[in-house]
Length: 229
Image (tube, rainbow, N blue to C red):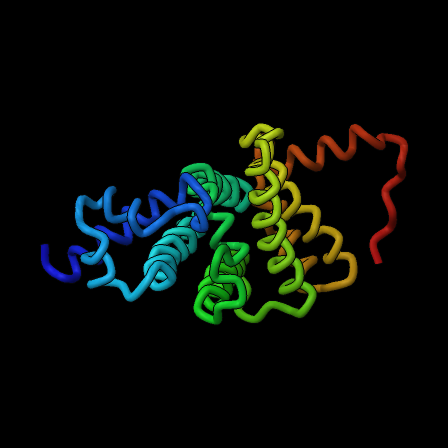
């Protein structure tokens, strides 16, 4: 293999091993054996486990950020549901690796690792804002989107600890959470209120946002509607 081809092979092997176990538990010897090469040859391409680990995280971060890419067609609820499906596909396939990426793994405090984590969060934020059709989000709308990205991340990490809630339920819940966060912020922010109105206007009767509204109304049918301000 050429130098770059061999590096990519080692990154792929490392990512697969890091995806099945904690990176702390994976040794250079195991990576070398899985790649079918000697330990010294691994060090020929990477100075140490840390550099190989960061290269694997780089690939994982790029792949995870790409999961938030979605064509801007159709109701937002359906789009977010597809995004969450791809997001949890990644989490499901790379559980320990995902946890290591989001928590820093053996590279806690590493500026390189922290920068990669921030890149994933920023990419997710920018994709969601683009779907809202807003060029410059207000501070309150920005808070909604960034809070939701953080919620998706923390929900996935908690789900990995035993997977006690069905995955499909969590994916739908996170879409509902986005609508709920937006609705709360819309009370005090004109831009967010406009975004919410546009979302609901395009939502079909069988969409996830409409489902949430129906469920909430069924829980409190006696609460009178409040006059708009």
